[in-house]
Every structure is written in C-alpha cells, then in structure tokens.
Length: 162
Image (cartoon, rainbow, N blue to C red):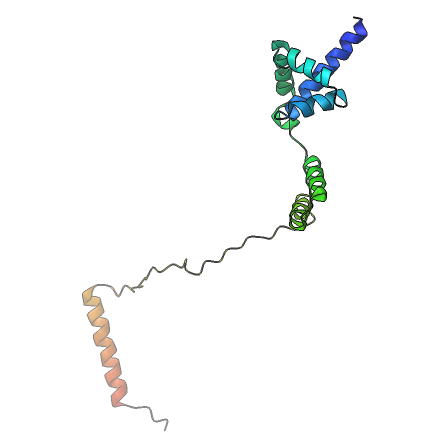
C-alpha cells in the first residue's frame, strides 16, 4: 500500500465519520454518500471493520469536539429542499399542499400571523371605595355646623336678582 492509498483511506474515514454524524440513524446513507454510490462489498467491509473500531469512534469524537453538534445538523436550505422534494413526490393533493405550505413558511414566503389573545373574562373586579379624610370628628362637626349655617342664611335671604 502506498502513501497515496493511506491518505485516501484517511480522507474516506474522515468523510465517513462526518456523514455518520450528519445521518446517525442511517448508516447505509452515510456510507453511500461517502463512496459516491452503492457498493455492497465496500459497504459490508466498512460496516465490519470500521464502524465499531475504537479509532473510528475517536475520529468521530474529534470531529464533534472540533465543530460541535450543531455543525452536523441540516441547514435551513437542506430542510427546505427535503420538504420540497418530498412534497413534489406526493400523490395526494392534501399532502402536497401541506408540504408546500410548510416549505413556504420555512422560507419566509408566508408571514406568520401575530397571535393576539383578548380575554374578556380576565377583568379586574376589585371594588375600591375612596374615602376623603375630613379630619377629626370635632373638625368634621364644626364644618357641618358652618355649612348648615351658610345654607340657612342663603335660604332666608334669597337672591331674586332685583
């Protein structure tokens, strides 16, 4: 095996580790993407020799530590492309419409409606009575007497405008 073959194998391993982190639930898809197409013998050999090896798992961990988990998640464009593709394939009109609607929302073609909630039953029923402070009882009585006296004087001398 030459140095060139070793470098290619390292590149293949690195690409496979990357694809497996991107598609952890679909080993076959990750291998096919790495190889550029389905090759049953190569897929079987990789599954038997690389996937469970400690060095390969260490390589995946290095990639995770270097880039973080979010790096391997699909982008907005990837998700939109998949939704659009699957919607296009659907034979049922309702499924197509739902898929296209989801695609349009994801791509910002449909404005999200603001959720305004008006709850009429949520009113404040605290009953408050405001009281004016008229001072002490003695001050209050004096004010009442003075007011009563004024009223009596006004009643006795009505203003008839002449």
